[in-house]
Picture 1 (tube, rainbow, N blue to C red):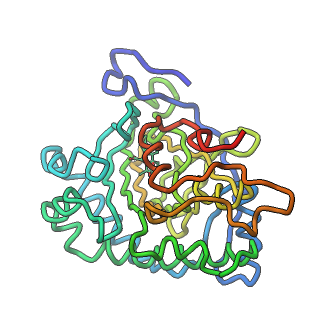
Picture 2 (cartoon, protein in one colour):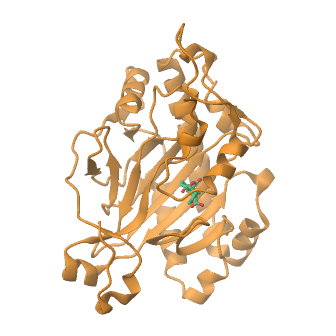
Length: 331
Ligand code: GA4
């Protein structure tokens, strides 16, 4: 990985670049209607912490409508978009990710999905950008994706033989669930590609802190995941499907049986990438600890006890690429 310094690429400096990785064709594909789905979901999450979901029941129309509205927003003049920022952490952001100096070739809108804790910032964004939010595009999409995420977690619980079946999904169904939603826009970077043959990092490597994340993107590539042996591979885009990531909290709740996936996004040279991600998290006061049925006899929890609030607070003190669970491991 190098940091560019050529004068011709001034507006790219400080944002890291990366050589493209090989395209991975082995991503597990789960059909939500498959009677074997519960077993296959667990297998995929043990091996990759990641899978592609098809036959998911979310209408394509919802995805296209939100993508169109998102593009309308990101194509507004900079001064208009800035009215919805800076992110605190909610709101519009450009290039800066999080509060600790991480940067990427990206613009985004980060929103809270829980009406109970909707921040003043989110309300202001809703008021100032009526087009995208007055339309039901965001709400319809989030509602449908949440429903699907609950079903995925119920199947996962069944596959892991956790009882009751809603032991995982109840945390996201809870009205105090601390979940959020992100619209990402990765502008193209043509000069850079031409000059260096490399791509800019849009969103640097990290794991998601929550339970699960549900991602949908347009047909532009860029997403990469890190396999267990440390190899980075490109995920072929599929605008009709969802990609599900295991988050750190789920890794803890399964005592490390399911692993949160390290991933990153590279900007493309000619096409913009638009992604929409629902991050399903528990209520702030929830204790995050391995579920007793997943700690085998004679085994111990690998993690110290903590609440989601403690984990989140610690995450916001970290840099994007940090191994955040390290502080909570027993040694
Ligand atoms: C990564 C997953 C989600 O996008 C996010 C990110 C959050 C942010 O952009 O505000 C964080 C990042 C994410 C993890 C570490 C901290 C917090 C930026 C950052 C450096 C919204 C989240 O929940 O954690």
